[in-house]
Length: 329
Ligand code: PMV
Image 1 (tube, protein in one colour):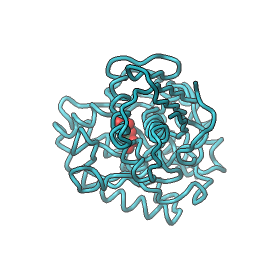
Image 2 (spheres, rainbow, N blue to C red; image 1 turned 120 degrees about the vertical axis):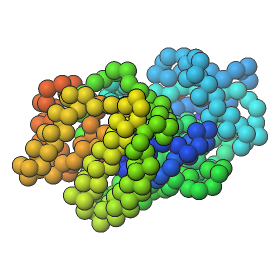
Image 3 (tube, rainbow, N blue to C red; image 1 turned 60 degrees about the horizontal axis):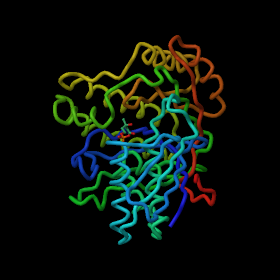
């Protein structure tokens, strides 16, 4: 009744932004991401005879809302497996929180897999994606590697809302993403609160959904054709549109900082100088820049020198969730 899983974070090229169902984590529109190799979350789950679920993240015991989230994920697995045993969970990220990457996607996918396997289940990727989705929407795109598309689906119960691999890591191995950390752990509006607020109040929310649907078609096509300029352009305009919808909320939500804009300007300057590079931006101040392997070090060096940039992380397309024989406890 013990299993360990490792999963990687992902960065969306076409963003998920807004839920049509808050409880089941069902989005209004589809999204497309790249899974990042080299960075991972590892999670061990053991079902035993304890009286309550207990969970540790990077050595810290979780309580309150953080623990309740884990318990709900365990409950979904217990229900499927028909078991009642409580669990001990430990999770470890090999990238610091200050790396500017949310760990919720990798952590959610690793937890769904480790808990399922520990409970004796062998879910297909699609079922695992549905389970991971309910921990954190973006986690459903970290079950498989390479490039994954999360279809919004139409079913009320969420049974058709999961991510599938559009292309594996070897489809475009020379693609790189550079994360530019402009603010390590500054408190922001969480993606969960930010997107809910946009759905409820943004005058641009409806336009966002419409544009995102078109962007998704264009991005998938560019990805499959390995058309770097087209993929980069759609990723940039999609990020701008997501942030425009946030700025159109009442009160507005602004994730950009001065250093964020300075990086975005430098990306444009790089491009004007003949280096193809494009940015995207999640619900935070840290841009992620898409470039090619041959330019990656130059891009990272140039952008790291922008005032306000604290550090950078370089990643290539990575794989999906894997089972490890080595447990965390
Ligand atoms: O699933 P969450 O709560 O981590 O939300 C992710 C939202 C964005 O990062 C802004 C976009 C995305 O698709 O990852």
